Length: 386
Figure 1 (cartoon, rainbow, N blue to C red):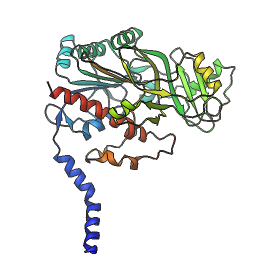
Figure 2 (cartoon, rainbow, N blue to C red; figure 1 turned 180 degrees about the vertical axis):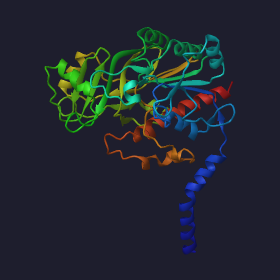
Figure 3 (spheres, rainbow, N blue to C red; figure 1 turned 30 degrees about the horizontal axis):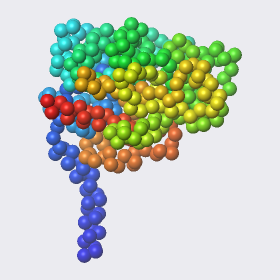
Figure 4 (spheres, helix red, strand yellow; figure 1 turned 60 degrees about the horizontal axis):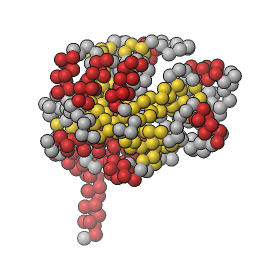
């Protein structure tokens, strides 16, 4: 009997992934008409919207024709080709009537990135000085009209980091801020695992040049740290061990929102973020906390950055449903390989090493995926109650 039990256990162990996949295929699809906008994707892998596609695909949200959403096709924005060729399929060329028809036939929209594509990165030219001109990018007047139509129809709107920053015009930004009760302070930030330019070749040339120009031609950093860049060009840096007692920003969530979104109380965040403020009409779901020394505190105070500050902003009233993710949340190194497995999120701990301070997989598995899945599930349920 014991032998048969061992054989049965081995059969279950080795066939378990197959049954997980079979179970996924047997699950029913859920129709949800989505308009996704990504103006920054430079490959068919869709790095800037892949995380959202992962959730849509895994949860089997589908289009009206019952097909699942494609990373390379089902979005508006910049479509990369080969040999420097590209196509732009944005909302900029939509008439007002076309925008209204689109909003009428859309359940939700997610603007994952409007930073755009620049000549330097697309054509491979090296510009040692300033950032090159952009080919396409920024939130347009037609984008804003579409968002306001979605708001008027009480549809779900998801936005995030850089959607209203450069190269969006200040007029469009101001109208977006007024409409949704948020305000960008002009500051963005990012953690760097090393600020030593002899060790970390990913530190942008302009960052070092401009910082030195503003700080007596000095760049003495050797440790990790958090870089803050203002739209005016001002740069300030908090260095680990001198200005920071914890080297990365952390996202903190209160108990109520932990339970609602199934996210942890605390998780590190090591990528780009923007410093946003919000009106009392919105809720703050999570906040960034930067753990500073007295010197670090004084630097933040000198540039009017509050600590903590919002990480996720929500408006979930009956009049409209809106989220702003104050970071490059949709850009994660997640693999689409495991989307077709039921219950794969129960094994999330296998996909990252939490001890690695720079890894970003844990953010996807522990924070982004459960939060966005919850948002979509709540909204889909509300649509089906009507």
